[in-house]
Amino acid sequence: MAAMTPGDRTGTVIVTGATGGIGKALIQRLAADGHRLHLMGRSIQALSELAADISATFSSVDLSDEQAIRKFSRDWTEPVYALIHNAAVVHVSAVDGPETLDEWTDTLSVNLIAPYLLTNGLQDRIVDGGRIVNISSQLGRVGRAGYGAYCASKFALIGATKCWAHELGARQITVNAVLPSWVSTAQALGDAQRQSEEQGIDLDEHLAGVVSQLELRRMTRPEEVAALVSYLLSDDAAGVSGQEWLLTAATG
Image (cartoon, rainbow, N blue to C red):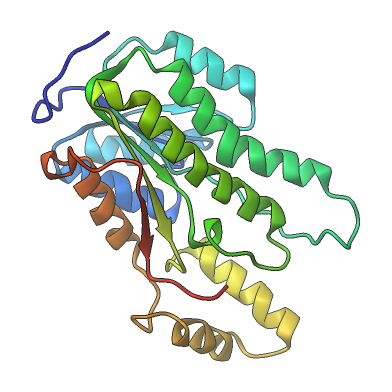
């Protein structure tokens, strides 16, 4: 088992969902902080381009595929300073509609089972004093119609965070969850577009209603999510574990 002091960050930081809006902000910030990064996602082309910009390594892995995750973990040999579980999928369906078990399975596989498999599979390569950050969601605290699978996965990820903090604490590995609310990404804007169409109102009107519920009256920027993760990987956060960090909130 690798040993490491809080100030020694020679291990790699693995970031899943690296090609999305929050993922791109994460890798840019963490690269600027001096971390060595390994990017995970599905698109080889997108990963290759991002990795080249920040001198990172990358792997194309389908996080809904248990065997692919297990193979990645078996093949990984380097010390890991941090795991950033950022990848997520969203499917929208209601329990009083047609059965959508496939969508539930996909959501739980990527959003919950993949973080478990990666953390479990890499446990002996995570250095003492390392970090795990689970990107949950404000929808890990409140429900929203049509988001049953997504909410279930994000509620559960917060629960896992608190359990893992106890289980890994003896090795001084911190485990925290970050809960963004509305973040100005393409995915969030797509959700807003769908919701505005369902309500029969203009997108701008719907967005104005969304941000009016937020404390800062605006969406969170991806860079602000990255800044919080940067802090949680810093020496200053060595004593912070088992916590859920909410970035603005709404009633859902």
